[in-house]
Amino acid sequence: MAITKEEVIDFIASMSVLELSQMIKDLEEKFGVTAAAPVAVAAGPATAEAAPAVEEKTEFDVILTVIGANKIQVIKEVRAITGLGLKEAKEAVEGVPTTIKEAVSKAEAEEIKKKLEEQGATVEIK
Image 1 (tube, rainbow, N blue to C red):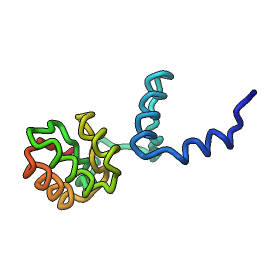
Image 2 (tube, rainbow, N blue to C red; image 1 turned 45 degrees about the horizontal axis):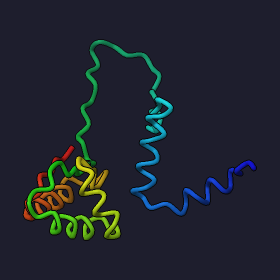
Image 3 (cartoon, helix red, strand yellow; image 1 turned 180 degrees about the vertical axis):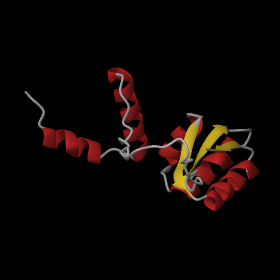
């Protein structure tokens, strides 16, 4: 019996964000690909005199690198920050290094880092 595309879509729609993220990683690993969005390249003559404009980074990722001694407090803080359920937050904390939030402002990233470090965790902002 063949599985239809609609059944696959319904199955994926029922997954949690954490489960979907892990599934994407597994698929990337199995097939040797990445799910990164393609980047459009602007075509045009480039001159040696024109220096490329350096864009200031406006979006940052907050990555939990070390849990620390207060694992339960860190899980509670991750739940508050992300809105994940207890199981998903626990899995995220136990699976360090884990990206807690993606594409947030520098101020929000610093605030999240501060909250997690107050609980004894080590956090990295990229």
